[in-house]
Length: 323
Image (tube, rainbow, N blue to C red; front, side, top):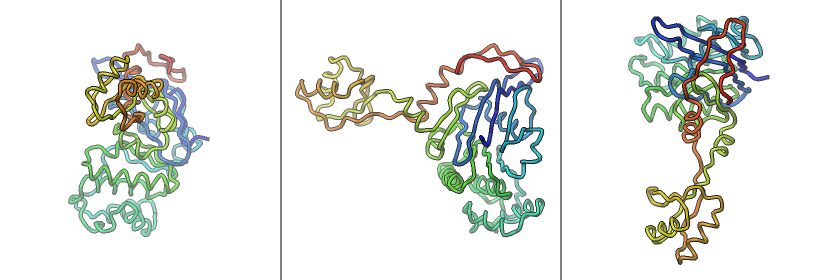
């Protein structure tokens, strides 16, 4: 059974003197237990609204949702103790130390003080736990927020854009922490638009556009599906080699230190064209797709204006275009 299951969710926001905003529409999503699941999409694609629906912060107009096997929001109180969440910027008492902020939260939930010390060490803040939070960097505050979300030792941890506003060092700190969380047995649902970071930490992803999931699966499978057939070519005489390849019908473009040859169905044809003209390769290698290029390709097709009607409560959302 998926740890998160959404079927046909729809959420529309009514706006004064403006057209309604269909934030989530006909949304299906499954997240299996274990590892790090990336929930991707550009700003405004509906990621945060989906998380708010799961956590009972807003109510869906239609559809069904389950967390840890229980229907939500009806039985959210029965499972909320097994879920940790960090949605947007964490808030703490700035004049209190990191340790005291966590201790106050732990006391409110009758969590032993040893758990506070365990988590300060786990997120790498043990050496700064006695400092006031107002002196923390953004990355340190994010790590303290993740520690707060982990106080209850949750089975599912939901992180909404944890890298927002961080510098390179802060992003690296949070990335390493998320990798350790995924390896520790916690299921991490990571919402982000930072695709290079997601590719480094996630096992599986779902890509969202205009309120619906347009593709999901393992990162490896998505990258394999996005393979372009382009190859990287280096040779001793680059200008002459390019001329040979273009005469042979290949499309050639410049890379920093090589040529990119596009649409190559058989790499042997590149080798043959060059060798027949007396040119020999120093490198011929496939150019792998990255998550950003796959994402841009998918969302370019999906991100088109749609005529979407708001379903009545209890009625299915309109099907929309095929995925």
